[in-house]
Image (cartoon, rainbow, N blue to C red; front, top):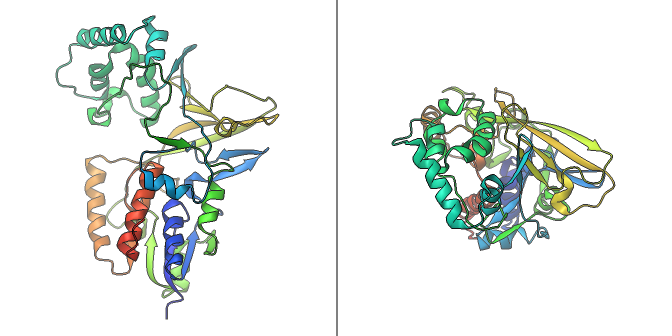
Length: 370
């Protein structure tokens, strides 16, 4: 006889939201995670009084009012606005591409001047139908922006030359003709005060959680532990990779505590030169306007993914998309297992879209509309 109504595999956003809502409906739930902590990739750890984003920077932004209302039930958000900068061979540019960027690059002042400069550079390339990512980018923004702000960063992200990447990776490169450095256009933006881990812990209050537990080990010992399973792990791993392995890009992090109050003056600096091995440096204290006497920085490296590494970004090319569809066909036949989250659905989510997808899961499974 089942011990629980639901076994929820994964204590990240999807698992925590579903567990919270299922328990509100009187369902008994067990949440497990193979890591030794909750919160998945949005896990924050307090070091030197600073909430460190252990698995890379996570900046909450959304235009979905119901999602914003929901997360504010579990955390108070500050008014952090993401305004990263890009470093290229001693030059510093604002991101996203805006009038501050264009003024720094070309000395232009008005939107009309910037538009004319971009149009001239696009015309000079003479590209009709882009055959690869480099030609696609050149046809959208011209040579200067591509060379200084797109090429090196993109090649480090993907581990390949831009000429060897498909044009479809970049569908558009938005240029904003205003002096506004806010990276996101969403209405709501901020960082939970006290870190994301506390937010997830509040969602999981009253829920039984076991960390450091492997799904396979648990169900091998207790195959009837739950009537239904919400599985937020890799869908191909669930099936022992019998059809093949879905591919990802991964990340590697190097963190350092510095005996200084302020290292780079901003939370995120992108390093756009191919010769600089890291893609960006995060200074965590700036996410929460910290005034601690020390600071912590993290260098982020894009990395090839191998089975056993942490999967971050699915490679949704033709081969992997077709393979995922074959796994989804298997998943559709599972009577008591529901696949969810970014790994269960082999899909990259911004945090707000992950929450919205969790709302859909709650409605489909529990009949509750959030």
